[in-house]
Amino acid sequence: MMRSAGLFLAALALAGAAGAQAPAYSPPRLADGRPDLQGDWSNKWLTPLETSALGPQLSVPPERAAVLVGLIRATAKRLGEIALDPEAGDPDAHSLAIVRGEHRTRLIVQPADGRLPFTSEAAKAVAARQVLFAGQVRGLATDGPESRLTWERCLAGMGQAPLMLSWAINMVRRVVQTPDALVIWSEAGGETRIIRIGGEPAAPVMRSFLGDSIGRWEGDTLVVETTGFRPDDGFRLAVVGRPIMVGPDSRVIERFSRVADTELLYQFTVEDPGIYAAPWLAEYSMIRTSDPMYEFACHEGNYGLPNILTAASASRVAQPPPP
Image (cartoon, rainbow, N blue to C red; front, top):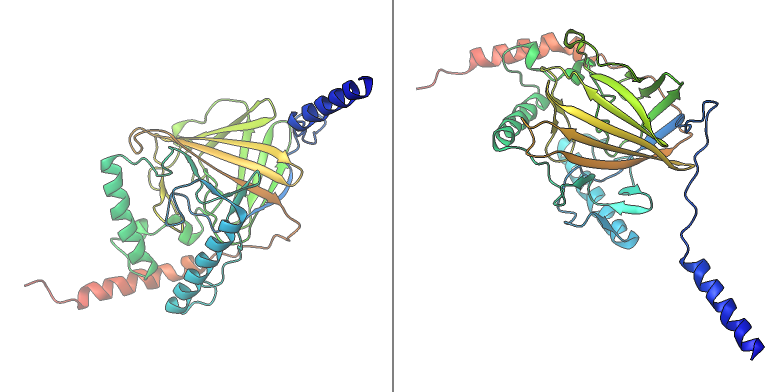
């Protein structure tokens, strides 16, 4: 009887241990007690921003993820051959975005359908902007240099809020942290974004291509609110699918959290009633990397802009007038 009771109690103890949650991750900390977010972080994946042909589910099992990766890479290779660009057909990424162990088919978490909740008017503007962008990719111009994309001439690159301009390439970002600021240097574009910890928003006349970012700590999560976007730079390219749009009245709330020694969770919410019918939330993880960062020498658009405009002007002159 005593032996049976002992075995029963041992079984209960084992069951309790199995059902207990794993201890919460405790990030390394700096001298001021805040989590250490510093280091070089990379994010490269084959996951689109919105729900796509990959399916409506947010996450898939690893074996299904491997099948989807094969399909995506095969499609990219075909498109690269059509475009006669060897780099276009060979993306660096070999996996879907992985967030806390889940293989994600999209970055948008809310709304539940995984789609950008554009208002009807904004959706029309986005469609028109995509047509314009397609023409710009082919070297066409519209009325003047103001119509060209800002990142084409390195006026703005891949360091803007939200940090979304990344897909299928090895995007490395270096994070440096002090009690008063967090600095993010993005390899692609070479932009250095300085996030002030605390303080008041800058005056409207101080608008920059990076916006005005102010951070605050909520427990172990750094929350960053960015406003002050320029009216002439609202286009945030998502290489697959529709772009993200921001405007002078937009507000972007980003959250940076260490969830593992090698994983930095990045979440962002975009709010703007003039563009979106409701706020929306997306997330992905940056993975610690030892890959070196290289200079991003971006001047081709600067040198090429006069030729682009000249060619576009000559093309318009050469076209016969409408009947």
